[in-house]
Length: 147
Length: 147
DNA sequence: ACAAATAGTGCAACTTGGTTGCAAGTGAAA
DNA sequence: TTTCACTTGCAACCAAGTTGCACTATTTGT
Picture 1 (cartoon, each protein chain N blue to C red):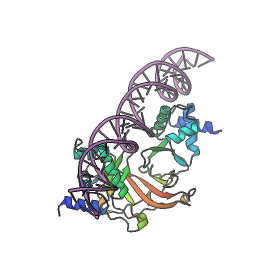
Picture 2 (cartoon, each protein chain N blue to C red):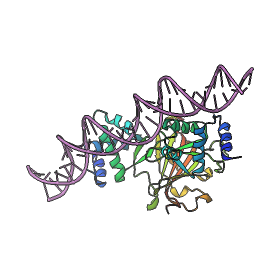
Picture 3 (cartoon, each protein chain N blue to C red):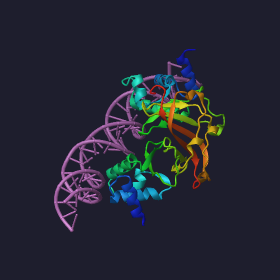
Picture 4 (cartoon, rainbow over the protein chains, first blue to last red):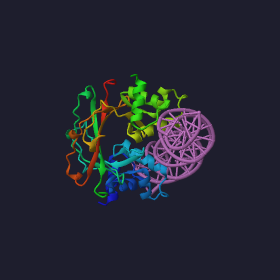
């Protein structure tokens, strides 16, 4: 099975029609180790080949259907990343989407990591009465490439 | 010492000239338990009384000088909160600004919490080679008010 | 294999949140 | 009280993302 077939199946599994743009977008995201912005994806796809609005809608659809997730960066942009099988999330339904994001202060790339959410604890009394449903840990520093 | 005097001193301690707008902005932020958006602050101040650009600049200045910090929300806005004394941060210089933010999924307010950063760990082999300088944990759920 | 129904695409115009440039006003050090 | 750098207010601007609408492509049923 080639990667296009694989991607088609993935799209269908999420009740999405298989279109050229979705396949290409999915492919770009799958190949990237880091979460990508609209602009970055658009560039990879060839900006003339894909309308910016269509790409925004494609990405939003991926997020809405639970195929991808979105991270807001410090400079008020969004980055998108596909949920990967190999990024084993907690099997606890509640915390299925717990995340660790690593933000490189040098190249500004954002890496997504699998994380055992039970290892994330906040030991503080002032949090009494707050019901925690989901956790995201965001780490800043330097990635191996920029080291 | 009244609160204005206190705020004046705080501003001076951060090498900022004491102006009406800074005092008022500081006051609004100090009174709030949650991080506030430009729009929220502006409303508290009386939108006619403070130019939006000036408020943006005031907030940016606070952040630049280390008096406040900024959290990017999911919907690409910024919220601002003063670093408080009573929010004891780790005394480890490196991780001085480690944070826990609680995002209420109902009222969308963001609460800042003190946190013992050493309690935040990500146990994962795939993070080899990543140098972590700062950590932020972001928790989603329901705050006591919306419970 | 084909047509109808449904969903996706492309374009232009728009909205929102935030920034820049510049002239005028103000705080604080001397 | 004068000076000078810093702050403020206004208008114009910018960039990211969205909406409305006509058109096109994918899917489903036959």
